[in-house]
Structures are given as structure tokens and as C-alpha cells.
Length: 108
Image (tube, rainbow, N blue to C red; front, side, top):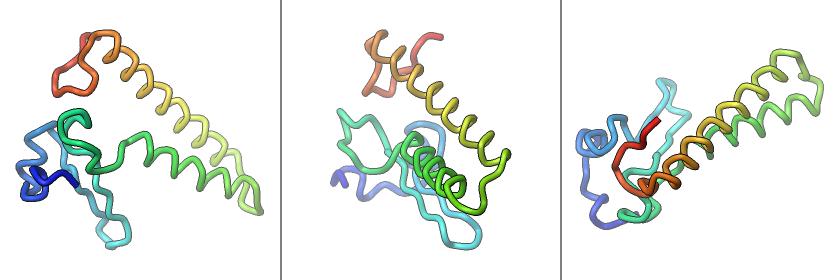
């Protein structure tokens, strides 16, 4: 993790992009550290939403390959893949507009 970010508390991290960088579930089984700040400026210091969605897709595809296959899993996989495509489109727009890798907003 980038030394500059090591000392940030959750409030300071949230102020960077409006959402908490560290999330946990109530049961204590999920602990996700999202990327905090642009990679070009801060280095890789967490995961992306796309990576988390990818994990969920792989889990559901495992269910589909075994005895727990269902239409509902199929729909969830389809929709998670659609979410990934939306995020990829956002990144494409950000690259085209020259704001990818910054904390600047892109134009719709």
C-alpha cells in the first residue's frame, strides 16, 4: 500500500471519492479494501468494483456447473455481466475524455 495512504482513516478515504474504501459485512466474513484514489497518483492499494463483480460471477458459474443450477443464477450472472459492461463503458468514456486515472468527473 502507498505510504501516503497507510495513515488515512476511513473518513479521510471516504472524502476522496464519496464512498468508504474499506467495507465489511455484519457477520465479519467479508472484508474488502477498495482502491483509494487514482492508481496513477496513489498506486494500487485496493481492489476494484469490477474485480468483486468478477468473483461473484465465478461463484455463480460454479453453482451453474453443479447441482445448484437455476434460472435465477443465470439471470444474476447475466445482470452482473451487464454491470461489468456498464463500468467498462464508463472507463472508456473517462479515457476518451482524458480524466481516467484522476479524481476528475467525466461528462455523460
